[in-house]
Length: 110
Image (cartoon, rainbow, N blue to C red; front, side, top):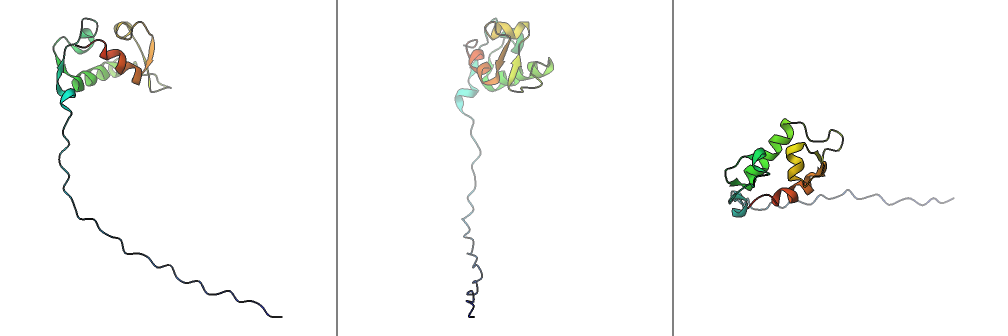
């Protein structure tokens, strides 16, 4: 009986990694629209203050208020449970998603 012998496998040849020339990244520039001050209306002012402030700061103050008062849902972390002040901002809704919150807050700035 003749048995067929399997041909020997060739070892895999590794390709040399080509290095890209190191490019220096420029510093990230903030969008000027986010830095332009916006004026909170009378409904939003008790939460973030009455003075004009950039959208980035407005968002930071809003989240600080949410975390300070424990308004983020413990099970569904993207859900915000409104207290009396936030319920006025959210148009009477008791609970909104974070993404919906941004849209609702934008209605209260000029």
